[in-house]
Image (cartoon, rainbow, N blue to C red):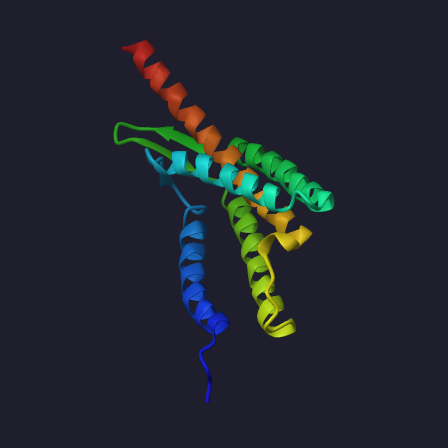
Amino acid sequence: MITANPTTIAAVVLVPLLAWRIYRRVRRTIGRQRLSKIRPWLTVAFFPLLVVVLGLVSASHPERLLWLAGGLAAGAWLGAYGLRKTAFEATDEGLYYTPHAPLGIAISVLFVGRILYRFYEIYALAPGRVDDFARSPLTLAIFGVLAAYYTVYVGGLLRWRFRVAREAVASA
C-alpha cells in the first residue's frame, strides 16, 4: 500500500500546477499576443524581487552568486535579442506583438527541464533529503536566464507602449 507522506502530497499538488503554468507560459510565446495592461507590471516587479531573494539566500556562497549573475547577463542579452525579433502592431483594437517563438520556447524548455531534473534529484536520487532551490548553481543560472529574459523583454514591451502613446498624443 502506498503511504501519503508530505513529499508525495507536495508532488501531487505541484506537478499539475507546474504543468498548467508550463502550458500557459509556452502558449504566450507562440503567435500574436495582445499587450495586457497589468501583466507586464507584475512581471517587471516579480522577477527582480525573486532574483533579490535568491541572491540574499545565496549570499553566503559567492560562487552561487556568480552563476546567478552569469544567468542574468545571458538572459538580459537574450531579452534584447528577443525584442529585436518581435513584430509589433498598434491597431485600433489595441497593441499586439508577436514574440520570436523559438527563443521563448527554448528558454521555457530549459527552465522546465531543470525543474523536472530537480524533482528527479529530490525524489529518485536522494529521497527524504531536504534540499532548497538555491543550493544548485546551475539552477540559479537557469533561473537567472529566465528572470532577466522576461524582465528585459517585458520592459521593452512597456517602452514600446509608452512610445506608441506619446506618438498618439503628439499626432492628436
